[in-house]
Length: 149
Figure (tube, helix red, strand yellow):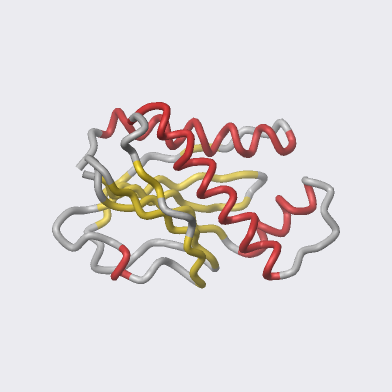
């Protein structure tokens, strides 16, 4: 499991993503450990598998109301489910891609897999917990799940 100090790269990436959209920073809550017997999440989740020297996954899970608000803040008129899923995939890609600067080029990330609801526990390692970090943007709550070892 990665050290809690390394979570900063993921959290600064999510903050940068939202700041780029409308200048509004996210409020990041205290990370906590989840035993992975049940996944933590909202309406949709973007899951990125990690391979190389580090193994596991990173996911972002958000309610559809938040995703629609992001689409609107971006000036998009299309708020279809397809657009919301694309946005969530881009969010997950951005967070994981930025982590490569911290962990190096051997930090291999898969394309995002978008699922409805929280990720199925089959995505999460059973032998170690995940760090769950809640965050809020414009009153909308979401989470980042990080399970990398």
